[in-house]
Image (cartoon, rainbow, N blue to C red; front, side, top):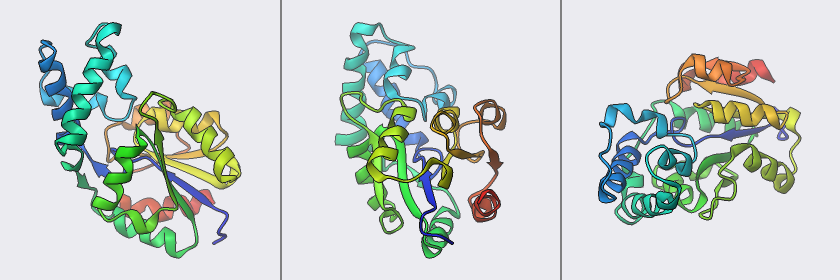
Length: 217
């Protein structure tokens, strides 16, 4: 396998199931601001999209940054980011891609400083050549802009790269930048969402990723 082949992996809903940590931090931040938070099971949709968009659904524009600050206090300072579980089989898939010479990057809408703590905590660091995410000030909240930035910085060609993610913002961002994408259905996005979002192909389990990626290349 040529070393020029590049894989971009989303983090939440693709590498790890972060539901308890993210949703718990989100609900706590809303309640601190006096907003009655929906039950945990109704908030799976906040995992994947930029945090500012999620808080904007519950707070006036003038309070969104307050919500984000409360969330980050719980998620970062109080350790909510580590309240997650790697998906079964994902380490083995990454190890196989590394052995075949792929360049592998994290590409997440999560702030990069958080992602850089999570990746080593769950023993993913040996597999990745770099970790890219949003900036704390909101730059690169849009995953399309983030992928465009990565294309410039890392210099890989769109036609040799594949985005792997569980939400339409992953697959759509890939399409806008000329990349193919694998929509993974073990995360938080449905097969319908991923297909409508432009996924090149779907994958049902981490163990199937090597075969799916091989078929695309």
